[in-house]
Length: 366
Image (cartoon, rainbow, N blue to C red; front, side, top):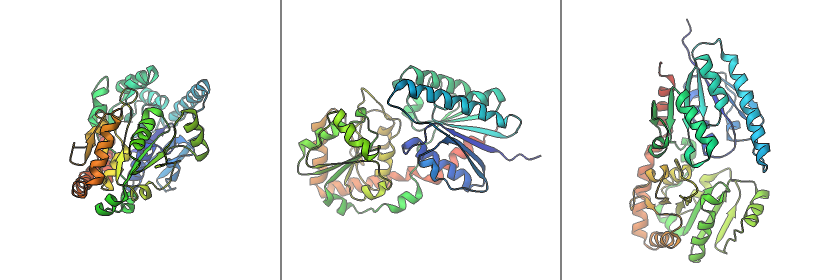
Protein backbone atom coordinates (compact mmCIF):
# COMPACT_ATOMS: atom_id res chain seq x y z
CA UNK A 1 0.00 0.00 0.00
CA UNK A 2 1.26 3.49 -0.90
CA UNK A 3 1.26 5.62 2.24
CA UNK A 4 2.90 8.63 0.59
CA UNK A 5 0.97 11.79 1.34
CA UNK A 6 -0.11 14.32 -1.25
CA UNK A 7 -0.30 17.95 -0.16
CA UNK A 8 -2.73 20.23 -1.97
CA UNK A 9 -2.21 23.92 -1.26
CA UNK A 10 -5.11 26.35 -1.72
CA UNK A 11 -4.59 30.11 -1.81
CA UNK A 12 -7.05 32.74 -3.05
CA UNK A 13 -5.30 35.97 -4.02
CA UNK A 14 -1.87 35.45 -5.53
CA UNK A 15 -0.15 38.85 -5.39
CA UNK A 16 3.18 40.05 -3.97
CA UNK A 17 2.11 40.55 -0.36
CA UNK A 18 3.25 38.68 2.74
CA UNK A 19 0.99 35.60 2.86
CA UNK A 20 1.65 34.35 -0.71
CA UNK A 21 5.34 35.17 -0.24
CA UNK A 22 5.48 32.96 2.84
CA UNK A 23 3.47 30.26 1.07
CA UNK A 24 5.99 30.31 -1.78
CA UNK A 25 8.74 29.39 0.69
CA UNK A 26 6.59 26.70 2.28
CA UNK A 27 5.69 25.08 -1.06
CA UNK A 28 9.32 25.14 -2.19
CA UNK A 29 10.28 23.55 1.13
CA UNK A 30 7.81 20.70 0.57
CA UNK A 31 9.06 20.22 -3.00
CA UNK A 32 12.69 20.15 -1.85
CA UNK A 33 11.77 17.43 0.65
CA UNK A 34 10.44 15.31 -2.21
CA UNK A 35 6.79 15.70 -1.21
CA UNK A 36 4.01 15.25 -3.77
CA UNK A 37 2.64 18.80 -4.07
CA UNK A 38 -0.17 20.53 -5.95
CA UNK A 39 -0.99 24.25 -5.80
CA UNK A 40 -4.38 25.81 -6.54
CA UNK A 41 -4.36 29.61 -6.72
CA UNK A 42 -5.01 32.64 -8.92
CA UNK A 43 -2.58 33.97 -11.49
CA UNK A 44 -0.29 36.99 -11.42
CA UNK A 45 1.69 36.98 -8.19
CA UNK A 46 4.76 35.65 -6.38
CA UNK A 47 3.44 32.07 -6.41
CA UNK A 48 3.93 32.03 -10.18
CA UNK A 49 7.68 31.99 -9.50
CA UNK A 50 7.59 28.38 -8.30
CA UNK A 51 9.26 26.42 -11.07
CA UNK A 52 7.83 23.31 -12.66
CA UNK A 53 9.01 20.09 -11.02
CA UNK A 54 8.31 16.40 -11.38
CA UNK A 55 6.54 16.29 -8.00
CA UNK A 56 4.73 19.63 -8.39
CA UNK A 57 1.55 20.58 -10.28
CA UNK A 58 -0.04 24.02 -10.56
CA UNK A 59 -3.73 24.78 -11.13
CA UNK A 60 -4.75 28.39 -11.76
CA UNK A 61 -7.94 30.44 -11.87
CA UNK A 62 -8.80 34.11 -12.24
CA UNK A 63 -9.23 36.32 -9.18
CA UNK A 64 -8.59 40.02 -8.66
CA UNK A 65 -9.92 42.74 -6.39
CA UNK A 66 -12.09 45.43 -7.94
CA UNK A 67 -12.75 49.03 -6.93
CA UNK A 68 -16.41 48.01 -6.87
CA UNK A 69 -17.25 45.97 -3.79
CA UNK A 70 -20.05 43.97 -5.42
CA UNK A 71 -17.70 42.89 -8.24
CA UNK A 72 -15.09 41.71 -5.73
CA UNK A 73 -17.77 39.80 -3.81
CA UNK A 74 -18.97 38.08 -6.97
CA UNK A 75 -15.42 37.13 -7.95
CA UNK A 76 -14.86 35.81 -4.43
CA UNK A 77 -17.98 33.64 -4.66
CA UNK A 78 -16.99 32.28 -8.08
CA UNK A 79 -13.47 31.47 -6.85
CA UNK A 80 -14.85 29.64 -3.80
CA UNK A 81 -17.20 27.61 -5.98
CA UNK A 82 -14.35 26.71 -8.33
CA UNK A 83 -12.07 25.56 -5.49
CA UNK A 84 -14.93 23.72 -3.76
CA UNK A 85 -15.74 21.59 -6.81
CA UNK A 86 -12.08 21.28 -7.82
CA UNK A 87 -11.32 19.74 -4.42
CA UNK A 88 -13.57 16.74 -5.13
CA UNK A 89 -11.11 15.38 -7.68
CA UNK A 90 -9.28 14.05 -4.58
CA UNK A 91 -12.43 12.42 -3.13
CA UNK A 92 -11.26 8.86 -3.69
CA UNK A 93 -7.56 9.45 -3.14
CA UNK A 94 -6.13 8.47 0.21
CA UNK A 95 -3.48 10.28 2.24
CA UNK A 96 -4.36 13.71 0.84
CA UNK A 97 -3.81 16.78 3.03
CA UNK A 98 -5.51 20.09 2.22
CA UNK A 99 -3.31 23.05 3.17
CA UNK A 100 -5.40 26.23 3.34
CA UNK A 101 -3.33 29.42 3.22
CA UNK A 102 -5.17 32.32 4.95
CA UNK A 103 -8.76 31.94 6.09
CA UNK A 104 -10.18 33.00 2.70
CA UNK A 105 -10.24 29.67 0.74
CA UNK A 106 -13.28 28.42 2.67
CA UNK A 107 -14.67 26.46 -0.32
CA UNK A 108 -11.97 23.77 -0.45
CA UNK A 109 -11.82 23.63 3.34
CA UNK A 110 -15.52 22.71 3.52
CA UNK A 111 -15.11 20.23 0.67
CA UNK A 112 -12.15 18.67 2.44
CA UNK A 113 -14.10 18.26 5.67
CA UNK A 114 -16.99 16.61 3.77
CA UNK A 115 -14.49 14.14 2.28
CA UNK A 116 -12.75 13.50 5.58
CA UNK A 117 -9.38 14.94 4.48
CA UNK A 118 -6.83 16.28 6.92
CA UNK A 119 -7.20 20.10 6.92
CA UNK A 120 -4.25 22.31 7.85
CA UNK A 121 -4.77 26.06 7.98
CA UNK A 122 -1.93 28.58 7.82
CA UNK A 123 -3.65 31.57 9.35
CA UNK A 124 -2.14 35.02 8.69
CA UNK A 125 -5.03 37.36 9.58
CA UNK A 126 -6.56 38.88 12.65
CA UNK A 127 -10.17 38.27 11.65
CA UNK A 128 -11.60 40.23 14.56
CA UNK A 129 -10.50 43.58 13.15
CA UNK A 130 -11.54 42.84 9.54
CA UNK A 131 -15.31 42.72 9.69
CA UNK A 132 -18.16 40.25 9.98
CA UNK A 133 -17.27 38.05 6.99
CA UNK A 134 -13.74 37.46 8.31
CA UNK A 135 -15.10 36.66 11.75
CA UNK A 136 -17.38 33.99 10.31
CA UNK A 137 -14.53 32.57 8.23
CA UNK A 138 -12.41 32.40 11.38
CA UNK A 139 -15.14 30.49 13.21
CA UNK A 140 -15.44 28.07 10.29
CA UNK A 141 -11.66 27.57 10.37
CA UNK A 142 -11.59 26.67 14.08
CA UNK A 143 -14.44 24.21 13.49
CA UNK A 144 -12.98 22.57 10.36
CA UNK A 145 -9.20 22.57 10.93
CA UNK A 146 -7.24 19.60 12.20
CA UNK A 147 -4.27 21.93 12.71
CA UNK A 148 -3.99 25.72 12.69
CA UNK A 149 -0.58 27.29 12.16
CA UNK A 150 -0.48 30.83 13.56
CA UNK A 151 2.17 33.42 12.73
CA UNK A 152 2.38 34.92 16.25
CA UNK A 153 1.20 34.47 19.81
CA UNK A 154 -0.88 37.61 19.43
CA UNK A 155 -2.75 36.12 16.50
CA UNK A 156 -3.23 32.79 18.26
CA UNK A 157 -4.82 34.60 21.18
CA UNK A 158 -7.40 36.23 18.89
CA UNK A 159 -8.85 32.88 17.78
CA UNK A 160 -12.27 31.81 19.02
CA UNK A 161 -10.78 28.41 19.90
CA UNK A 162 -7.13 27.51 20.48
CA UNK A 163 -7.65 23.79 19.80
CA UNK A 164 -4.80 22.31 17.73
CA UNK A 165 -3.04 25.67 17.27
CA UNK A 166 0.73 26.14 16.95
CA UNK A 167 2.77 29.31 16.50
CA UNK A 168 5.40 29.21 13.73
CA UNK A 169 7.04 32.53 12.88
CA UNK A 170 7.35 33.37 9.21
CA UNK A 171 10.82 32.92 7.78
CA UNK A 172 13.01 35.07 5.58
CA UNK A 173 14.23 33.17 2.54
CA UNK A 174 17.84 32.00 2.41
CA UNK A 175 18.36 33.45 -1.06
CA UNK A 176 17.00 36.77 0.12
CA UNK A 177 19.34 36.76 3.12
CA UNK A 178 22.31 36.19 0.83
CA UNK A 179 21.57 39.51 -0.87
CA UNK A 180 21.67 41.47 2.38
CA UNK A 181 24.86 43.31 3.31
CA UNK A 182 25.45 43.74 7.03
CA UNK A 183 27.61 46.80 7.68
CA UNK A 184 26.35 48.84 10.68
CA UNK A 185 28.80 51.71 10.22
CA UNK A 186 27.80 52.27 6.59
CA UNK A 187 24.14 51.89 7.48
CA UNK A 188 24.51 54.56 10.17
CA UNK A 189 26.08 56.95 7.64
CA UNK A 190 23.17 56.57 5.20
CA UNK A 191 20.65 58.34 7.48
CA UNK A 192 17.82 56.60 5.63
CA UNK A 193 14.54 55.33 7.13
CA UNK A 194 12.38 52.96 5.10
CA UNK A 195 8.83 51.66 5.30
CA UNK A 196 7.27 49.17 2.87
CA UNK A 197 3.55 48.46 3.04
CA UNK A 198 0.33 48.04 1.11
CA UNK A 199 -1.36 51.19 -0.18
CA UNK A 200 -3.72 51.58 2.76
CA UNK A 201 -3.91 54.59 5.06
CA UNK A 202 -4.25 52.31 8.09
CA UNK A 203 -0.71 51.14 7.39
CA UNK A 204 0.51 54.51 8.66
CA UNK A 205 1.22 56.30 5.38
CA UNK A 206 0.23 59.73 6.71
CA UNK A 207 2.05 59.13 9.98
CA UNK A 208 5.17 58.28 7.97
CA UNK A 209 4.87 61.60 6.12
CA UNK A 210 4.35 63.45 9.39
CA UNK A 211 7.53 61.97 10.88
CA UNK A 212 9.51 62.84 7.77
CA UNK A 213 8.22 66.41 7.84
CA UNK A 214 9.67 66.81 11.34
CA UNK A 215 13.11 65.63 10.20
CA UNK A 216 14.27 67.44 7.04
CA UNK A 217 17.89 66.52 7.88
CA UNK A 218 17.22 62.81 7.16
CA UNK A 219 16.02 60.82 4.15
CA UNK A 220 12.88 58.66 4.05
CA UNK A 221 11.69 56.06 1.54
CA UNK A 222 8.12 54.74 1.35
CA UNK A 223 7.53 51.66 -0.83
CA UNK A 224 3.88 51.03 -1.69
CA UNK A 225 2.81 47.60 -2.89
CA UNK A 226 1.00 48.92 -5.97
CA UNK A 227 1.86 49.52 -9.59
CA UNK A 228 3.49 52.79 -10.66
CA UNK A 229 0.37 54.04 -12.43
CA UNK A 230 -1.68 53.48 -9.25
CA UNK A 231 0.76 55.25 -6.93
CA UNK A 232 0.04 58.85 -7.93
CA UNK A 233 -3.71 58.21 -7.87
CA UNK A 234 -3.44 56.82 -4.33
CA UNK A 235 -1.42 59.80 -3.09
CA UNK A 236 -3.75 62.32 -4.74
CA UNK A 237 -7.01 60.69 -3.67
CA UNK A 238 -5.85 60.48 -0.05
CA UNK A 239 -4.25 63.94 0.03
CA UNK A 240 -0.84 62.51 0.88
CA UNK A 241 1.83 65.12 0.17
CA UNK A 242 5.44 63.95 0.50
CA UNK A 243 8.01 66.48 1.64
CA UNK A 244 11.27 67.01 -0.24
CA UNK A 245 13.11 64.44 1.90
CA UNK A 246 10.66 61.62 1.05
CA UNK A 247 10.96 59.26 -1.90
CA UNK A 248 7.74 57.37 -2.67
CA UNK A 249 8.13 54.43 -5.01
CA UNK A 250 5.85 51.67 -6.27
CA UNK A 251 6.23 47.91 -5.91
CA UNK A 252 9.81 46.65 -6.24
CA UNK A 253 11.09 43.20 -7.13
CA UNK A 254 14.29 43.35 -5.09
CA UNK A 255 13.57 44.59 -1.56
CA UNK A 256 17.07 43.55 -0.45
CA UNK A 257 18.49 46.38 -2.53
CA UNK A 258 16.48 48.90 -0.50
CA UNK A 259 17.35 47.39 2.88
CA UNK A 260 21.01 47.68 1.82
CA UNK A 261 20.46 51.41 1.30
CA UNK A 262 18.70 51.97 4.64
CA UNK A 263 19.43 52.58 8.30
CA UNK A 264 16.09 52.01 10.05
CA UNK A 265 12.90 50.08 9.22
CA UNK A 266 9.50 51.29 10.37
CA UNK A 267 6.06 49.72 10.65
CA UNK A 268 3.50 52.37 11.58
CA UNK A 269 0.19 50.53 11.38
CA UNK A 270 -2.58 52.45 13.11
CA UNK A 271 -3.62 50.33 16.09
CA UNK A 272 -7.15 51.80 16.03
CA UNK A 273 -7.73 50.65 12.45
CA UNK A 274 -5.45 47.65 11.94
CA UNK A 275 -3.27 45.33 14.01
CA UNK A 276 -0.35 43.45 12.46
CA UNK A 277 -0.31 39.71 13.08
CA UNK A 278 3.35 39.42 12.13
CA UNK A 279 5.26 42.03 10.10
CA UNK A 280 7.32 40.52 7.28
CA UNK A 281 9.21 43.72 6.46
CA UNK A 282 10.34 43.97 10.08
CA UNK A 283 11.70 40.41 10.05
CA UNK A 284 13.51 41.21 6.80
CA UNK A 285 14.87 44.43 8.28
CA UNK A 286 16.21 42.55 11.30
CA UNK A 287 17.93 40.08 8.96
CA UNK A 288 19.63 43.08 7.35
CA UNK A 289 20.76 44.25 10.79
CA UNK A 290 18.50 47.31 10.82
CA UNK A 291 16.88 48.53 14.06
CA UNK A 292 13.09 48.70 13.75
CA UNK A 293 10.30 50.89 15.08
CA UNK A 294 7.00 49.02 15.43
CA UNK A 295 3.53 49.44 17.03
CA UNK A 296 2.89 48.74 20.68
CA UNK A 297 0.47 45.87 20.05
CA UNK A 298 0.21 42.97 17.61
CA UNK A 299 2.38 40.13 16.45
CA UNK A 300 4.99 42.50 15.07
CA UNK A 301 5.63 43.67 18.64
CA UNK A 302 6.90 40.18 19.53
CA UNK A 303 9.82 40.58 17.11
CA UNK A 304 11.27 43.62 18.89
CA UNK A 305 12.86 43.84 22.33
CA UNK A 306 12.46 47.42 23.49
CA UNK A 307 15.74 49.31 23.41
CA UNK A 308 17.71 46.29 22.18
CA UNK A 309 16.89 45.83 18.49
CA UNK A 310 14.27 48.55 18.15
CA UNK A 311 11.40 50.40 19.81
CA UNK A 312 7.67 50.00 20.42
CA UNK A 313 5.86 53.28 19.72
CA UNK A 314 2.24 54.08 18.92
CA UNK A 315 2.12 55.34 15.33
CA UNK A 316 0.17 58.42 16.39
CA UNK A 317 3.11 59.58 18.54
CA UNK A 318 5.02 61.05 15.63
CA UNK A 319 7.22 63.29 17.76
CA UNK A 320 8.36 60.32 19.87
CA UNK A 321 9.10 58.34 16.71
CA UNK A 322 11.11 61.26 15.34
CA UNK A 323 13.01 61.45 18.62
CA UNK A 324 14.03 57.77 18.45
CA UNK A 325 15.14 58.12 14.84
CA UNK A 326 17.26 61.11 15.77
CA UNK A 327 18.71 59.19 18.71
CA UNK A 328 19.71 56.27 16.50
CA UNK A 329 21.10 58.37 13.64
CA UNK A 330 23.06 60.78 15.81
CA UNK A 331 24.77 58.27 18.13
CA UNK A 332 26.98 55.85 16.21
CA UNK A 333 27.75 53.61 19.20
CA UNK A 334 24.08 53.22 20.09
CA UNK A 335 23.17 52.52 16.48
CA UNK A 336 25.88 49.89 15.96
CA UNK A 337 24.95 48.17 19.22
CA UNK A 338 21.28 47.94 18.22
CA UNK A 339 22.13 46.92 14.65
CA UNK A 340 24.19 44.00 15.92
CA UNK A 341 21.34 43.00 18.24
CA UNK A 342 18.92 43.18 15.31
CA UNK A 343 21.09 40.83 13.29
CA UNK A 344 21.45 38.41 16.21
CA UNK A 345 17.70 38.31 16.80
CA UNK A 346 17.01 37.43 13.15
CA UNK A 347 18.10 33.79 13.61
CA UNK A 348 14.51 32.90 14.58
CA UNK A 349 13.43 33.55 10.98
CA UNK A 350 15.31 30.54 9.62
CA UNK A 351 13.70 29.16 6.45
CA UNK A 352 14.59 25.50 7.04
CA UNK A 353 13.35 25.53 10.63
CA UNK A 354 10.02 27.03 9.53
CA UNK A 355 9.42 24.56 6.70
CA UNK A 356 10.54 21.56 8.77
CA UNK A 357 8.12 22.54 11.53
CA UNK A 358 5.24 23.08 9.11
CA UNK A 359 5.92 19.78 7.34
CA UNK A 360 5.88 17.96 10.67
CA UNK A 361 2.57 19.57 11.64
CA UNK A 362 1.03 18.86 8.24
CA UNK A 363 2.14 15.21 8.22
CA UNK A 364 0.87 14.50 11.71
CA UNK A 365 -1.43 11.47 11.80
CA UNK A 366 -5.01 11.94 12.89
